[in-house]
Image (cartoon, rainbow, N blue to C red; front, side, top):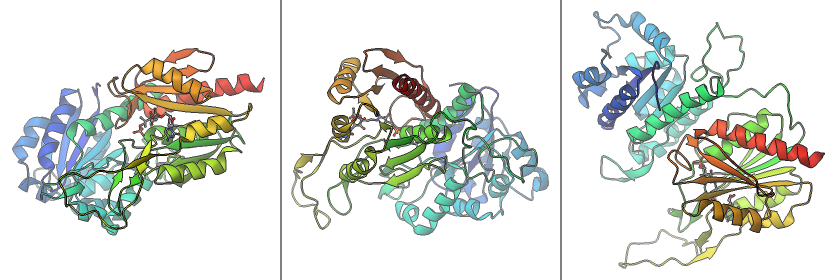
Length: 440
Ligand code: PMT
């Protein structure tokens, strides 16, 4: 994915994960971006200025009071120069400063002066990450439209296991490239920016106080239509600390919900555990954890829904028993007995009336078309969206997706790799067509 012509600030705060950011800078530069780096005073305990300079091919901005760099204005010109900023690693301290408007070093002053999209990749010990103060600061930033790159679960530098390790450079690169892909294939910036009395002629969305909200479209094809959408993974508890889950981030379904809401629909989004915020505040989001919870909420809302889209990656099985206490490490092997979860889509397919439209998803790894056709038929669907893990950039864990759409009349359409907000537009377009044919 080319980033030719893009100006990107890479901000590094002082954490051990800074060594991984060197690879990110290489990736950005290799793919055509111009990169300038900004650091806190502590960053240079972890990586050298020379490495940052050499890889970015630019000076490092790290001292607000440097006589050489004259930072009294440098953070402003840097902010004007940039198309976007990625802060990786973002420590708890830096996240706290960003959320609370504190500007006491080169990184935090640059952030505050910036009115462009900002990506933040947190990196810290899992106990710090889970601390309510840090979680509150993260939520504040998400609500202000910052693109949060959630840390995966894994081994931490201190040897602990948990959530807090910085996302890998390749995945961070993909988030940034996917964002610019969205801009170029939609011909607009994302998120679209609200007119505000404080505009002062600034044009880019992102770190601009718009709360990341997307404006509703002025005309609406779905005005007063009720849409039910499932998204995200489900977590099936094993004991009070462990669960069975999957890699779905929720992004695909959240984008579909936003797109319907942009078109004036009354949207209920039933979402499994996901850190991604809905961009359109008109979406009525109901957060659930397990497949059973999702099933109960869907049963409640399905009857009144004109259109239902099931994009959630629902666990097919759940533990038969949930242990009341944390299961202790005793024997060499542990056997879990699993029982089938309700097939939500299958159930809705049996309930559906002739007026309702039901759309399912299929995530396949082999015999994709055949399996998808079987699902379309056996679950009584009007349309099925197929994505395959064999396609690069498709499925979960990506900002992008590549889909085929299959219809009950055996027609099929194949789409190119696109950003998920634009895949959502394609899906909603296809549903619009189905719906208008149904109405005539
Ligand atoms: O969330 P992202 O990271 O953006 O990733 C998006 C996605 C890859 C999760 C999404 O595009 C996708 O493919 N979702 C469906 C994943 C899935 O579980 O597919 P499936 O083939 O196992 O299920 C088929 C259909 O039945 C789906 O519509 C699913 O929502 C539904 N289902 C499955 C099991 C179950 N118990 N109840 C269901 O309703």
